[in-house]
Length: 87
Image 1 (tube, rainbow, N blue to C red):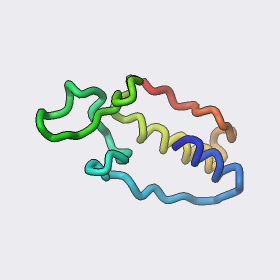
Image 2 (cartoon, one colour):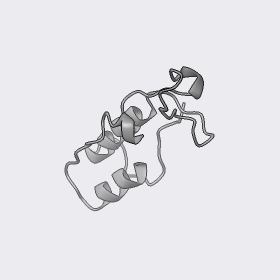
Image 3 (spheres, rainbow, N blue to C red):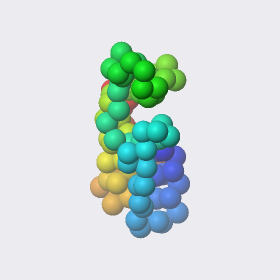
């Protein structure tokens, strides 16, 4: 996701639209999400943030979106290195 923010900002794009805010059924939501499987209600089949073995806070994608918006607005430097900590 950060790579997309970086590439578009570097190209001079002036606005972006985030359309996958609550797509829980497709596992590409950016809304707060269970940080680990212990936080997911049993039997729902919802993926948690640590599915790939990297622990992330439940608001990780919201924070990436915020940082991407700051980069787009020129409030932080354009960088290919994601400034958002997983925790």
